[in-house]
Image (spheres, helix red, strand yellow):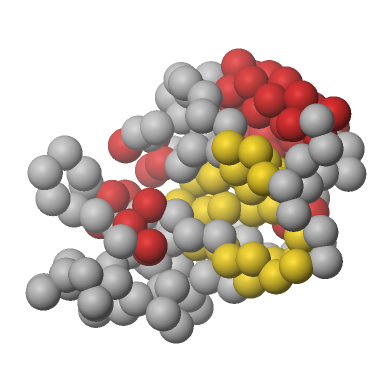
Length: 173
């Protein structure tokens, strides 16, 4: 499996601009024979979205942009990170920091949501983002199973920290 890491500079709320960057680098990686392209956390909506995730229109546009990206991509898989709502029911919905593959963004497989939401120092994800349940799922890419982690999901290793910050270890689960 060949993987590309696309480190892009996103702008919060610039769904069209962020989508252009994702598609451009996704296509470039695909022409270079990459099976998977990884993008930064919340690349679709821009980071950090803060209070904007409380607006249903912002979440809806994030999901629409991810679907447009999925429809516009080729055979290669993209791991998109976006703010996503858990439900379409009226009223406030929990918001997740989620990763979706190209296929998942098109609606054919589930997303993977971050389990560990940092709330310390400059981070306030615990205020805006719900932890994902269940922990991350593996996905098939290029006939191999991979797990996608988001942010601190990979940092909560009990063999590294004397006092882990979170009660769960999504990677160890």
